[in-house]
Length: 376
Image (cartoon, rainbow, N blue to C red; front, side, top):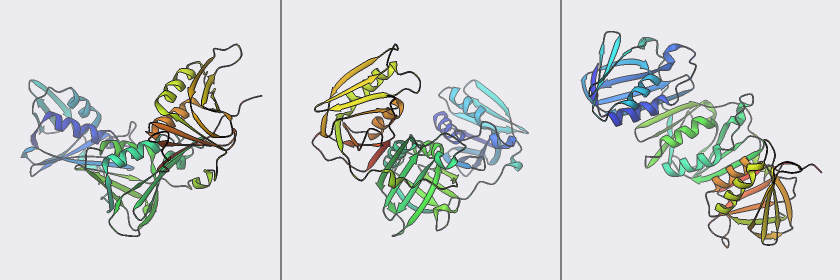
């Protein structure tokens, strides 16, 4: 095999394909990146039996062929190469990478032992890449990271006609985002639980395209696989099993208190006040007419407080939150004004975004956060 390709094009393709390679592969060949050169196209692929990635790029193919090399090593090499065309060629069981005066020789892995990549499922519809990436980022922050509860490490995808709903929770907060998409068939109804990290990485990587195709295995999403394709890149991943919590019932039917605060000053104040919050201690928020007071620390420890302007409808309330979870929600609403709805100081609060103080809040994105009970 022998081909030439632009350095930036190759480095980008290798980095994207290698991003999902396992740190501790079950068998050595799964640490490999599959390179296939044929008819003006170089195809790079990776697969670990859970997630597959494939991308095709234009290349000058002198000799067609198929090789398997260490993905992480090739990614490190491509990142360090000078900005010159790259020539890759095989010599027996080794592959040479030449760029300008730089030359690397890598051993190949046994390509005949590499598993066949899964086929892309049937396309079900499409959505704008930037919309998809933003929605996934807003929801993935709330996904759990405890592998002993695998169903909480995923993002639930619900498709009903032209509406897609994403939801994730780690039991301490819940994020839900709705957006419109273009289904390939009317009346489509499906549910899937996708690993949050894989979904987030995929969404970020595919944003450069105008649209992303979402593909389902069979008639139902729950049959084990989902695929995403855009900008010549495609990813498939196995779905998680398990029962996702009935999250819609967690949102309160009505609120005793609704507060609105400008988001940017709120974020800055939480960051400042939480500097004195020891590990696992909350930031306390006290809402009264026209005012929000943030406090952290107590007793003989370091303490901090700050006051902000806030609009309040309903009863005054004092409530406490994990500062990291609060900041995650404020960052995710991506709006100039944050609206917080409360029932009592011991029940979850709901955060949404508004374009300005006088506008109606949108339910497109909702972030529910559990309060921290204060002693005394």
